View (cartoon, rainbow, N blue to C red):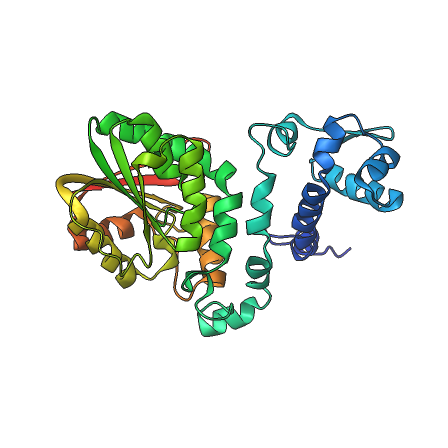
Length: 341
């Protein structure tokens, strides 16, 4: 009697099918967020009929969407009634202080989704297929949406960096926040250090959002706006702390060193640079969130990457900062690299 050979370890046919259909998962979650489905369930609309009425939707379509979300753990189901797992109540109900549904507007924006329409072409050319320079295009409009929508997922890192700054800096402290975006990294530190001043650098249209957040948190009188290209704007040379949050991964290593050298020259002799990044381990395949971030850069930038600790240490050393300490950010996939002379 013959037997079929065992299948090799690795993805099964079911896994392959699931991966090729994975775009439907993000589309379903984005649709539920736009319908404000999770908030509706939290308010007591728990059947497909009730949800369809509340959300002004089709009953059959609502039932299919809710069943789909239940399969993937975003809803619970008992009889004909749907419920919310605790984490969904925390992060996807609009009235929750920790609501993060807004991030779908940037992560699932047409530009970022379209960037991966033809991965084979990206790999053949080695560069993004987004027009121009992708997400590093001058005054790229997508960064305004980023600034407005991504605050919830960035706050654990912003508060953690504020903790680090509070332990290392007291009294008058000049801070430069490069690629400030929503501004919450500099704003969070300014809230902890009442004598600190922050210079936030980004494109002018993005800085409008950062200024709104600085005003909302009562630090706008200590918050200066520097508009323009980080590679062109004169930083000066008297900053105690420079923040580089999620900018270096957009560029190749020589370009990173160019910016790092400007940062080193802008620091006081005992100043500190804090780099927040997705930093994979040396093997480049762990941990998953950091290791896979390089693929995001492949699709959206001409030459960006997720760099390892050794690579960051080598680049910063070329720029003149030779002492480094890496710290994992709690409740985040990111790491902070603290660099000094």
